[in-house]
Image 1: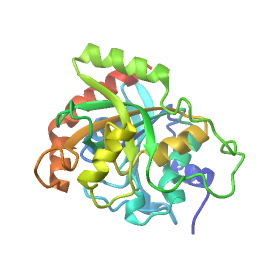
Image 2: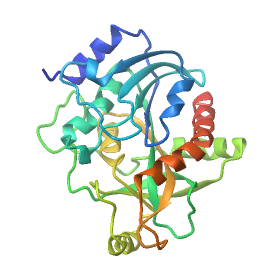
Image 3: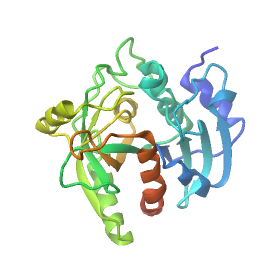
Image 4: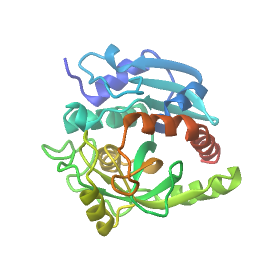
Length: 270
């Protein structure tokens, strides 16, 4: 039976006493960062009554609580996607649960297609803003005032202070950061070349199938947000070749370690 975010948080606290400062969402090909969490306690989504379960390839589908970069954290090893058939309420439920556990900062990662023609496969993009092209807003419906206000401001959806910190940390560890706007589509089909040309006109630099609902929910419940896209492939029509899921996972395997070092450095400097 479905429970409230507060009730799920209470169930997780029965297994771990960690009060996380930071919540992390580990996207496609980037879940290995969870293996660096010290004194980790894992809680499978499926072990929580009524909790939605991740089905996306490469997503383990569990919370990890422990310490990373000297900070108490809770990680989502595998997110929930709208394209899996989950409702928007399901997609953002883990964010609300992590907020109930105590997290004040949300760091998200994803694998994305590069729209900006100056990008290359393997680049890491610091998300400055987003465009919601999923056709749905996760806050539609009755508003729970205990979570946040009816009309949350999105002017600074991605914290300027955290973005400044990320740039300083990237310079320190020798990671080249691109910056840009992430556009989210519902998926699961990849975009057409015509859509990519349209998205470029709209000002998008990268495209994917996640992240935006979570960012909206995090802002709604008062969390500061930092987001990164690993450019795992160039979007449709930029290179004359078809897109594949394996290409996305392979990019995660090749560049995941670099992104992991960056995130640990950021955690150490929070």
